[in-house]
Length: 154
Image (cartoon, rainbow, N blue to C red; front, side, top):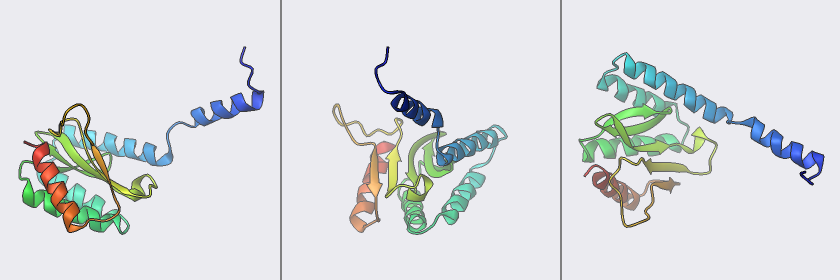
């Protein structure tokens, strides 16, 4: 028998019963809508417009970082196509998301994130980073992101 007091057991059970946050549920709903649009044959131009619309909805400083990331990725890596992924700007090769931007405001985080999926060719030994916290985009950060994205699609 569990010797934990009843209130402690109930507290742990209540926390696990909460499940997904409102932000996570919203992201899943956005993903479901993206999949429906893809099944209907949404065009690349529509995907880019959806990304730009999501970026326009973001509060500062997320919007400025997302706009800059979008510009540098489009300018430096022509192999990638913009698309939304769980309601976030993402960039895909052959339909598979390679990298994405998670604004801090999306999940009420203290920093934005630029990340890579497992389709990215970033392997470096037995351990390597797949996401990076972003508080701001400096010229050095931009150079590093461009190099990482180019390596990811190589």
